[in-house]
Amino acid sequence: MRDAASAVLAAIGTTAQVTISDSERLDEATALMERRLAELDRAASRFRPDSELRLVQALGGGRHRVSGLLAEAVDAALWAARATNGIVDPTVGTALRDAGYDRDFEQVATRSRPPRAPGVVPGWRSVRINTARRELLLPAGVELDLGATAKALAADRIAREIHRRFSTDVLVSLGGDIAVAGWRDWDVAIGAPDGPVVRIGEGGLATSSTGKRRWTSTGRTLHHIIDPRTAVPADSPWLTVSVSARSCLAANTASTAAIVLGHQAPEWLAQHGLPARLVAPDGAATLVGDWPNDVP
Amino acid sequence: MTPDQRAAARNRVKELTGWIAGAATALTLGFAIGAARHAPAAESTAAATAAGAAATDTTEQQDATSSSYDDGLQAPSSTPSASAETPAATSGAS
Image 1 (cartoon, one colour):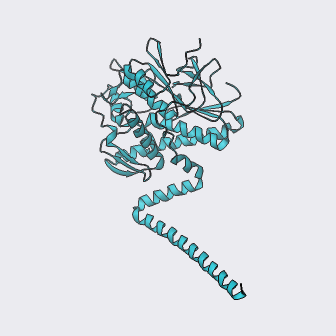
Image 2 (cartoon, helix red, strand yellow):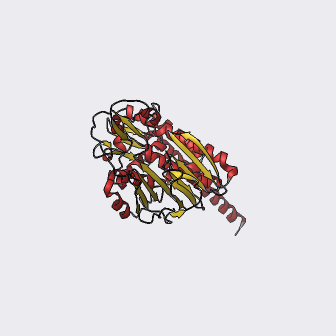
Image 3 (cartoon, each protein chain N blue to C red):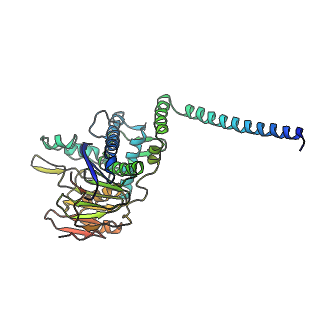
């Protein structure tokens, strides 16, 4: 990495990294990222009992006035659902809880509770958001999981804000979902620090994996990516899918959809013109679009 | 133009300026009263708090109104290329 400075901190149940060209602004950029992530956690966390999302859901079904930040997070999640025709669906909250992922992942991985029988995912069309009026229509019993899309949206926003405020090139990584802003290119390892490296100059790069956030319960191996059609973790032929897109949110949405779509994913990604790298459990990589060949 | 005509013109400008300022004030008050009438008390408080926060940082307000996902599921205009450099970050690390 050339002439850049980085900071890493733990936030929103994952690792947050900010890397900027202007090292003198690193402390300010890190503080800004930390503040924005704390705001996001208070608004949209599925695990904090005092988060705005949890409080709204506890009120029961109906129309609720919400903060601008929660409205944006719901809007982004519903956008992802529309863009993928429901393959990425924020109403999988109950299904995730039934599978056992009902608290910060560190606690999920170290306990043994059998998964509950799968129910039915209510479907994203049952939820409405009016961002101008900050009004959320949420049917009774619907639990939202905004985690992935909210995290990606936050990466995009934080990168843009740091770039604008401090006039510096910036890379923001939230749990490996990456957004960049500025003029320079960034080199990013795929899947692991010693993985193949690609250079990106704009937008976002996200990797979804069935190998991370994975736990075992009563002899079954489970992971965090729910197929909304079955309400259980997706039975995918891909261990990881990495996608480069115009934004981190778009990249995250596409990589998650590709895990769920399984064998149809390469064609779906190609139809959207998205460069992608899909890796099977045996390590075989399938490249889509303009994704470059690995450098040996 | 006679001195009387100039005085009349000055008065007319003052009247117009006053009328415009008055109308602007009335409109602002009207909007404020209308907004208060249409929002329940708790929502008004929340809206006021949000408005206050936005007023203290207009750049954040600009961020909130420009969605990063307006472009849809589109590829970046510059596609990724292979690199042998030391990476700055890892995608999918956690």
